[in-house]
Image 1 (tube, rainbow, N blue to C red):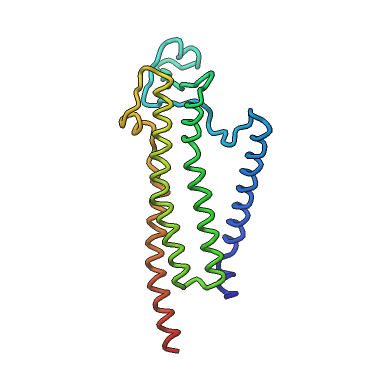
Image 2: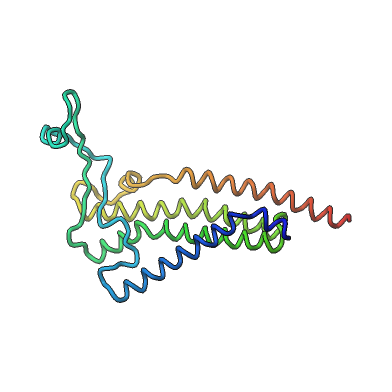
Length: 209
């Protein structure tokens, strides 16, 4: 399987190194949070939410940002909690942790996939199954993570302003569909189907020989 192992480089080494680095950083963050209450396990983007679908303009804003004649400045509000409550802290964490979990889980699955391919071979049913699992993880995980994070941002925003209530509309406004990740996942699933055919042909060939 040495030839298969060579085919997987340098991706195998990079993924393994990034995964170890990320786990190490998270471990250090956890240790620091135990001894320093100001250091959160997940710092996140802060207790702020930008309502980019709400905007306004004024002559004062134009003057403040030196707008030229014929141009105007649109002010997009960013709401921040000065003294966040425990509930707001929880919403902040939910607004960032799902994406982190998706990243770590994806790296773990990819690392297992590469190790399995290097050990058992690229065109094997084990490798195809792990590739299939990675594709579904990216597809379902990215959508789920975005829904959870958008819901958390909408809920946090509802605690910071009277102009917005927590609703499906607010969740849609604060969400951004993960097009690239979804397309990548569909590509991985398609490639897994192709490799399944190749693995079957290899098994038939070995059986014939």
